[in-house]
Image: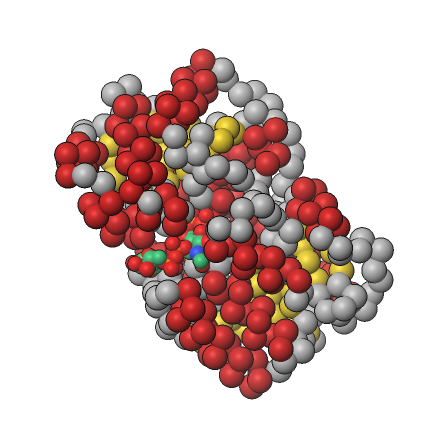
Length: 373
Ligand code: UD1
Ligand code: UDP
């Protein structure tokens, strides 16, 4: 029996972890035992607990309850808590997802006490080190033992950074194994896609779905204002539904002028709602005409559900979706966002080639963990 400790903390990681937990429960329960640490990075009911309830993820064995804070404070608290648990649990592997501070803390804690790290969603790069996530993912990849990339771009990025595709098992931190295995988020979207259909949709159709939470968009007033101005303009033609991230909610009236703020929140075609559950979210994605987002996960889910997407960032780690024409990068540029809206209004995207695997990434990962042991 292999023992893994999974570290999660932020909303998208809880969702991603559902795929591996499900695979373990359904197919590998006699071979893999999972212990879950929730760092407490996200803690509102609708940013955390709702996903455990809805997606059938086992309750965390530990919750560090670190809450919000500066990068240093938050990561340090996590590091201390995770190290203590790892010393007690003595797992065969530590599993981390993506690129948040919870990912980084897990990776640093485990690598220093020689617990092999499994990084799921490895190799993604924005090539923008001003992003906290870029630092987190580079550090995590370079102290990992098994690196599972969802896309061929991610896999190639790892090779470009010196990882060898020719290493042989058993892998270890100095002889790491890299894989291109598909995306656990795609596993989830396939698995939960039909359930979401049977739920009462929270909106019918003929709307745009928008999410905003990236730190430079929320914290830089000019960028936030430019995005909001674009949404106000587009809302003259279309309804826009915005499940608002708590980070953005807290900064909206601080970082944009009162007049714009009042127009934004009072416009009848702009529906600002609380963060929704995963099933509600994918139902919103499936029924939307267009997605406007700075979220990594929401960009991909738009693609899974064959919806065009305007990316309100200056770059993306998921460059394939831009290359095939299903998404475009508008940054926080009001004119480009509006142009993007007209572009997709006038040009229907028909082709969504398979980029993210076959929906069995989690099973693949479990099999590789077992065979490396
Ligand atoms: C974090 C990740 C980001 C990921 C995002 C997913 C890092 C550095 N960033 O960003 O990569 O895309 O999660 O959503 O790890 N807050 C609440 N309630 C909560 C959680 C947060 O009110 O349950 C508020 C707090 O004011 C907090 C702010 O949101 O200070 C930011 O939270 P934090 O976890 O630090 O970063 P995110 O912006 O959520
Ligand atoms: N999501 C959700 N409810 C919401 C907004 C997003 O369930 O109100 C889901 C979304 O479907 C995706 C994930 O959260 O699976 C993306 O997380 P987020 O945008 O917070 O972070 P990122 O992917 O950018 O790291």
